[in-house]
Length: 189
Image (cartoon, rainbow, N blue to C red):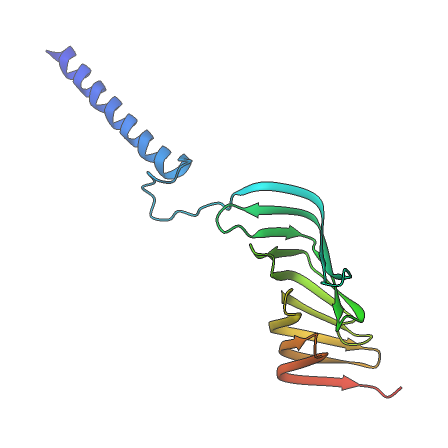
């Protein structure tokens, strides 16, 4: 009778261990996430393609280059079809006349290719003549030639700096508007 109790005890212990192992697997190591018991689950962004040294060019109706961008790498996300970019560099035109550039550490191109969002250490050059704008995020509407940011920015000119919260620019109209808390310091030439 004693061996029966030990055998039953070992069987119950084995079943409990298997159940505990299954729970740990489902909560910590499950790949599908569909059977996860964990209250906190974070899906990992999944890409269906990865490209290195990417160049994108858009031509205007008359055959001129309307804008172009390049990146050290690009990944198309399965979840929404957008393209994440590493080290994007954008070259656009203001009123079809003079080029301006924007660079960042990362970015995202919308699924339809109409919007480019630059993030992390954004530097814009020549949007305003001989000026440099630095901010942490910049939204570029590629089709409407509009640029904006709701975040703090610094506008550097040869003789001074201006700080602002937010900016909107219409490149077709060659108009840049600093939105809030605009402060500047300039020295005469």
